[in-house]
Image (cartoon, rainbow, N blue to C red; front, side, top):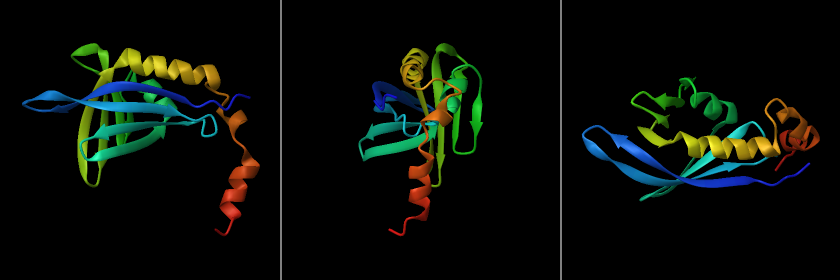
Length: 136
């Protein structure tokens, strides 16, 4: 099995009412060793901020509102070519917009490595169990 990670760059736009959208450069990242998750690393004026969430959530959000709690993903109501990512944290709330095609292309690259429904084949249960019982 290939262990190649997938990384793609894209620009999200921070949406704030009454203000022009502000571009935010980001990296989308996927590791086959953690086959259910994707990460988004946002490059902000304050440094880097990383969010990790389910790959399925990102895929479902391209088509229909998905998620609850800290992360919501949904198609933009006013532009079918964009997807919205709503992030909620104790320190704040943000809505970011991205090209749906960029997100779909990234997901397609992850599916080339780990097919949907085959994620469990990529988990090294012995390694994960060793992490749980180690006394570091």
